[in-house]
Length: 311
Ligand code: CP
Image 1 (tube, protein in one colour):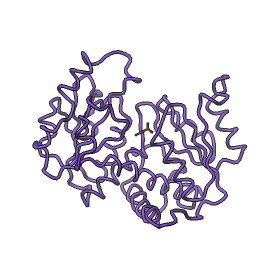
Image 2 (cartoon, helix red, strand yellow):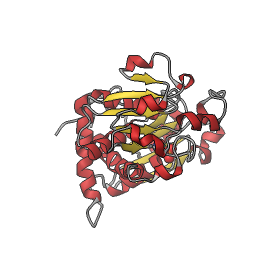
Image 3 (cartoon, protein in one colour):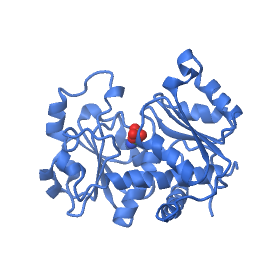
Image 4 (spheres, helix red, strand yellow):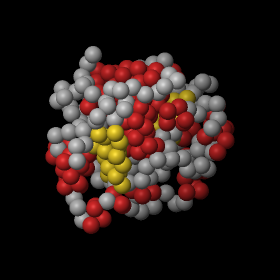
């Protein structure tokens, strides 16, 4: 049984290949639990996991709550909008209050890159990053990689095209770090205005044309346009973006015949993906959501149940 080196999960950039494999293997055991008639184990009985969300979420927030429940931990959800944050309380003071209430771990989503790290450096309980600005969304990256492993049997050697708003996507960054560490070939596809400067330094191939970017790939992972993070419009209209970068049925023949189609959600139907493709046979979007619970159970177990060095 391995351990995670850090008490916090901030991003996949700082995890080793072995740590990522440990999380994926642990998630497989958790998925076995989720297939049982009684999908609950007493592993984290008496522990308190707090969800502290400063930005909206459906999938990440609900699956962290469910993961805590399946491991018999108590869960508490705190939305910034309905907390004393609106009265001016700082992130650090909020977290210290939660620690005083007996929290054993804090899951945080925040609009500012580095917020999760700042919190982890301040309090001595595990902090799990549920998305910090355009920096990282490590649990999404891990569940995407787990889904690729499940669907394709391996990650090493697979060619994955990440299509869309790469510049503002924390999902893209976490996927790239994790996939590269596990030996996948990664392409990023999108207009040049949505590409971060020097993205090639992450070891990816850059394509500005959708057709070229998805040719012969094993996996397509589509991203939504992060309108909330773009200060100004980086393409003429959504309709034009959809025309050049929206995936439609006619594109499928360009990728491998058994290509796996992914989307982290939330989906903007008719923009990055046509409605008929979103729930087609090749799409594994619902599997991604299901795998998100197993990945988050694995991380809660490893970080507060005995799998990290600082335990
Ligand atoms: N994929 C993802 O992070 O979705 P939510 O914003 O609904 O959590």
